[in-house]
Length: 117
Image (cartoon, rainbow, N blue to C red; front, side, top):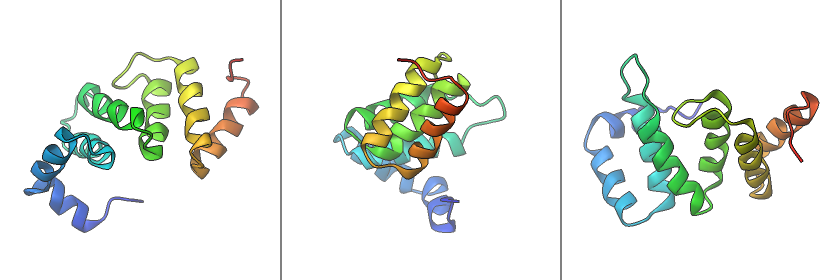
């Protein structure tokens, strides 16, 4: 699991400010981490709209981690309207970026016949 103690300190301390500054400068990885920060800081109602927006911006810059996370946002309908076609498309993009987890997910799409031509 990627939740390490030092990352948690960054999220709860001044680190989120650093991610925001870097994200404003267009840093793809900072956009992705900012998305993860907002997920960690959400209250029980779990509004994923802000995390999905940061994640989408990061994915548009080619970040494979963000591409993979968008699979879940669209598959589960959290932060974006549920759309299996979009989820499948982001999965293929993540596979093209050599994301091994996405490769496994793509196999599940085909296995469950969720894949769209």
